[in-house]
Length: 445
Image (spheres, rainbow, N blue to C red):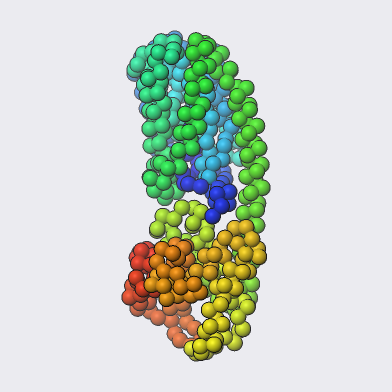
């Protein structure tokens, strides 16, 4: 199953993107939940508890309730929910290893409430130590919603002891688990993180793959033990092994996050160098970043391309540090020789970033193309249409808007209405029409 605490989004280099998402998820997952997030969490927790209580009271018992079995199950669930695999900006759990035996050693109708108790018990230490705030309690409760679907299916099917003959029923229960788990996750992602439903669905594939891989193991344990109360204990050695793997992965991600932070710090430092060399160019680049990120979100860029676009916007003029200041600040149009020299700044910028290497080396290819035109009339390579990286097309349009609406030494800023009209007039010639419309939507909002 997947956690509600982090947004669902797809995880450039895949490692660079994944660490960027993990860093973002870690920051948000541990912070206090407030405002509409808290209200939504409380509403969904209330809905889950109402459904779980209704199931406990109205569904058939199927088998006797065992207090010892319930205590063992809650303790086991508390242990397994501590095993978190960070995938992109998602936390994936191996809780199906305990959930399946629980459904056969206890009345299925009480399992959702016991799962919620297991989540709360498993994170009690985090709440006491301040790693999580009390505002996370509703989120922990909602994370138990995945157990509702299989509990209802198995209770209504009134199955006896687990057996291979009933595998079709168990498959239906697993499918119901995915469906019920998807709803609160999709609502949370859309409402809190502004992630499209389709993107959330794509991101949940990892959680589904994990559950599909572990469910047969859990079912084999349940069948072999005949649904006895101690059956959940049989999976704990595997849980311990997964915890070792999860910790090793976390250490690797910690190092990658530090490296990603170093890349971002280098980009900011280069931005400061630009601003120190020429205040207009530095301020202009930072203004372009805000627009580029907003347009990228409007175009639903995946997190990797969004990161590329953000860094390219910050560094698209970095090559100008090697252009003579008398050309940069010339109070009038450039002559042909000056223009030719100015047009080399994208190539110089690419070369500078390739010397840094890694992620910024890849961003250099986008920086090179930020002055290409949709119709092929740009520089330095005369690329046209889809040949130009989308990130560069976004930077190009946002760069032009910022330039038109900013005072320069040789002209006054254009009014916003006139600048927007000019953008649309150059759509399908200088700019990508889709990017222009996205930028116009951002500006109008």
